[in-house]
Amino acid sequence: MVSHNTLKEETVKIAVCIKQVPDTEAEIKWDTSKGTLKRDDMRPVTNAFDEFAVEEALLTGEKYDGTVVAISMGPEKVNDTLRNALALKVSEVHRCTDDAFAGSDTYATASVLAAALKKIGDVDLVFCGKQSTDGNTGVVGAEVATILGWSPLTNVSKVRQIDVANKKIVVERAIEGGIEVIEAKLPAVVSVIKGINEPRLPNLMGIKKAAKMEIPQWNADDLGVDKGKVGAVGASTKVVEIAVPPPRGAGEILKGELEDIANIVTDRLINMKVIK
Amino acid sequence: MANDVWVYIEHKDGETTPMSFELLGIGKTLANELGSGLCAFVIGEKVDNTAKEAIQCGASKVYAVEGAIFKTFNAEAYSKAASFLLNKHKPEVALFRATSQGTDMAAASAANLGFGLCTDSIGIRVDGGKIKLTRAAFGGNYTVTVVNEKAKPQIATVRPKAFAMPEKDASRSGEVVKETFTVAEADLNTKFLEFIQSQVKINLVEADIIVAGGRGTGGTEGFNVLKELANTLGGALAASRAAVDSGWVPYEHQVGQTGKTVKPKIYIACAISGAIQHLAGMRTSDCIVAINKDPEAPIFKAATIGIVGDYKVVVPKMLEKFKSKLNK
Image 1 (cartoon, rainbow over the protein chains, first blue to last red):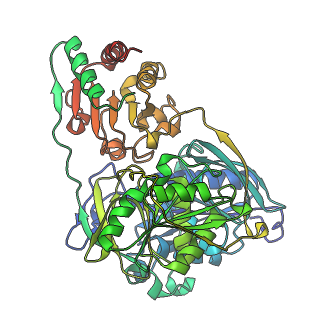
Image 2 (cartoon, rainbow over the protein chains, first blue to last red):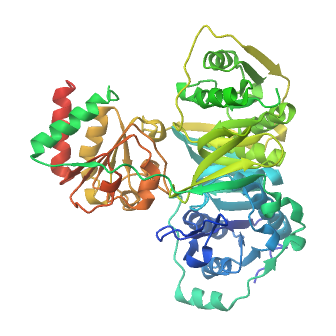
Image 3 (cartoon, rainbow over the protein chains, first blue to last red):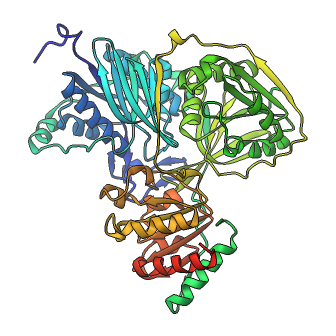
């Protein structure tokens, strides 16, 4: 293995944050009395947006001769998700886990991830997915950047270039109405959108090798995280109600000749007075 | 007042749209229930016109930070200014639109101040003097309601079009409070280089009419007639994940769990089966018209009006009728 200490000036150290989420193709099961997910009853998968983040981290590592470290936060099951990353040949993974982390809100989650990124040390670039498919909050990346005082780059649709020597990055952000081009100092936290790349699949050898690897763990003490400020204790907001949204009223299926159906539907839509 | 309701007014290089002021509508309702004031806050190079319009839309007071450094949106600079205002005045709640700008600012402000954040809220009410925020989770299959247990303010982003627009009244008057705050360019990590305007004219999230196509359209050509329908109705084109993943339509048009969440008045779903991931992105549309060959397609359970048939036959017929009835 190449020693990256001696090459430090020319290389880029990359981290990628991954979240394990329940597979939303399957039915979601809640423990309604506790207000928490019955995670044990659901198939866990890597958050869809994070697959793009892992791929972008790998591509960037290949292009700029960098190493990629993947981190995740969560219980033991999360090892499967980190093993997937190992099978894709990230160099190192770490799982942040502590009973005190359970029930963390976005800020607490971002604090733990920020602490882990600091512990990894000398990180230039962090990739993460735009949002998770379970919580759907889409703010953890920007919160991590703010906590660390690093460049916040959200909704990134393309990494144009990285100037490793001068520690700069230029990215395209897909925002309302078009593409915004931003130059930022490294370190930066880049949240990527779907379609930035085409995530590769692990090969069989990679999977076999990853299956045997140890997944190192970091707890609150290892990370120097104040237990009173994370988890359910530290969360600013408390969930008071979980509900299933009311189903839409049963619609009407128009039957008859196409000519009549087309007349009825166009009349109804025109009568809504929305079409100008 | 300490329990005021604050609404952030977003703009692009000083330009606002009516939607920039939309949260003053729900803001007024909340302020009335709390017995407090409705305040807007604006950050920009020159904000007098925006402040005036915010007052016409219901704000009794506008807090403003002005400066050349704030000419173009910069997430870091704007968030620092917003954090300064929120920390100084500690309102009950601060609302941002759940757009890219609003989300970036809310996230950074919450992280700067160490506050919790409720994102993409679709319901907000006052209960026992406390703000309760409801948001969708798991792609809209569940809703979760939260209350703030810690320091004020509760910071929240609100889904565009979730609440009624405020009523504008040019005779309203209010106070504009200009606060002194600046950020040195050298202290910013990020720099704006350029903006490349999209070819797509209508913003999907703000569109009142959407025509969408799915896997059943069978390819790029199938979308031509849907585009024509969208253009005729002055609407936007959308697609399901299947159509985007097949490369028929760019990602910016995707509606659903890994795409955009939309709430138009009219959503016409063509050859879309209606997987829960797609429904998550459009189920709150006012009127859903579903056109599908398969009478068992789940989309019909969510549709206001269902038409069992081939979109290739149904859509051209609808186009013909619309064109003659609308004189187009």
